[in-house]
Image (cartoon, rainbow, N blue to C red; front, side, top):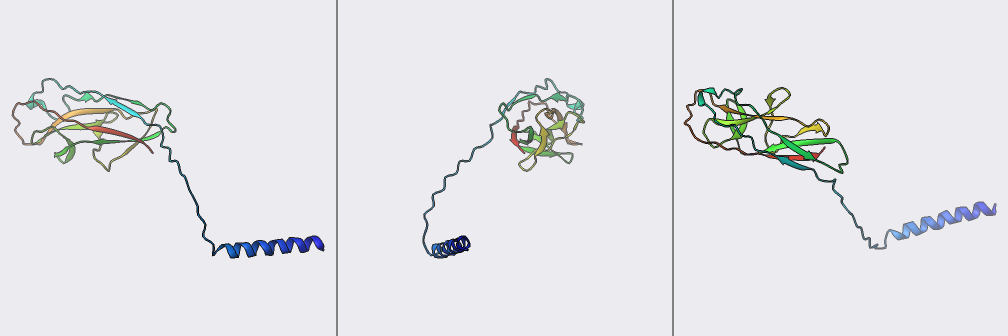
Length: 163
């Protein structure tokens, strides 16, 4: 009986301390270390189209690999996502890289099926590190547009992040 009495009085004492602690200010110092995952390094290369005949620009001719390497040594996961950013224009209803010539641009494609690779701030493509998306670039022109001979240039930035 004595043991039960001490246990009950201990609980009552604890309850009294908790109730009285509600009115006392407490200073709390919190330190948080946010540690980001190891970065990935993307290295790209220039795509050279060489001499392009205006009459031969049809969205198929002059297709080139847009090679890059991705170094994610020390990565925490294999699930990544990719974003392509650059100045864009619309050619034949598709968003393509602007090459500084009205009615002309560079279409970025997924090499697996030559489908349009989305470009822009809100377009992320998920992928696994061991199966990097292979990209291709191909010159395209707006139907019915007459182009004048000139040099062209387009650029894009690739952003890779963890999913």
